[in-house]
Length: 452
Ligand code: UDX
Image 1 (tube, protein in one colour):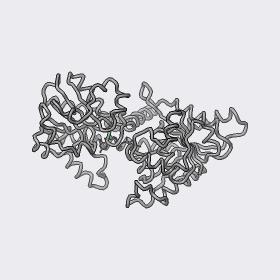
Image 2: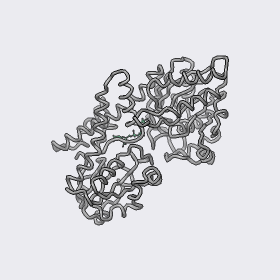
Image 3: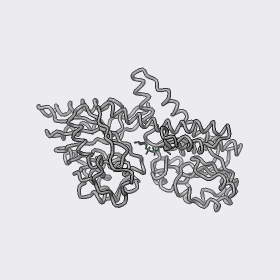
Image 4: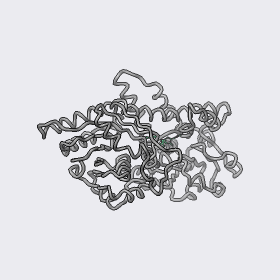
């Protein structure tokens, strides 16, 4: 089928490259010439494992352009995956979405086209995009446009984007127009039936043979995305809330979570306690859900509590250090891991930023390290950039405490015994509850945890 993807950010690029890999003819439109040039040269503007390999495998079916006219006319499906940054008041800024929808409408011809909202947008935005398309289209054409709007939320995790796209737990499509549901069903059939040959670097997991499809109305599809993300966020916050009680009563939260998670009604994933969640989705989506509910005079006490608990976890990390070191002023504290989670260079809403700023505000000195995100860090966090350490040795040298903030594999595999001697006081705070406390103690560390 013929597909156009507007926006080559995380979601758009993964969608475009994956669909091209599956054999669809895909044109990716982005107004940023530099990005288009880079992608044409086979280089990926974001850090995502496997993306460049998939880009190479999909190349014969893939075109990058800055012009809507190269991709929209004649497309069966147009995905709109532009950024929706938070405005000052926290609500999503829909300017890019509006202008993308207007440009799509200008380029549409009279073949039936499904316009899919792939950006995470407030519930109800499908209708809004539909109205924009209709207005723009009628400005230039007497006959009504042959298109329908659909929602197809993505559930991909950064660092896992390709696997989550090719082997998802489910595919959700929503539209109030039955024809567009048929088109999307056809588009995703290779994934639904798992009939494609897997990429060489990413074999099909053994337990994946078919993918369930949820084909529903527009509003339900839009709400599924928010409801699912908020649920995952509150699952983590619940583990963190229980973690605080566990620490008080002398229980081990890791054991508690393991015991809970083996109940199949609960499930073991997203119960890992620590400094809490960050990233571009959970914070933004929980906030947007609360804002949408408020428009209907509804409170979301559970979602609000999940946010509060998450914020508190970052503060608790600093309190633990204060309890141990007594005085933070003048202390040198190293943070291992800046990205909001491993295998990404994404720093949005990363716990490390709050923790670093809070330590600095208390007069401590900080040193920062990340195996991948430092380049981006220099650009996005110029005020904190002078605190970056080039090497792990440098980070540990003279430190009064080191905090493991992001559980990068490199940090877990470190020979920690080599560094203990470099520190002024060998305090380690395990922000993710992933280090072996006994082992650390045997090496001479004073082991602290957020909730252990
Ligand atoms: C998330 C959703 O998983 C995805 O479905 C959605 O489409 C976008 O948002 P992402 O933000 O990439 O994906 O990361 P994810 O792996 O979900 O982790 C989010 C945060 O939660 C990270 O900061 C991670 O460290 C934290 N986390 C995750 C925990 O603190 N404990 C856990 O048990 C799991």
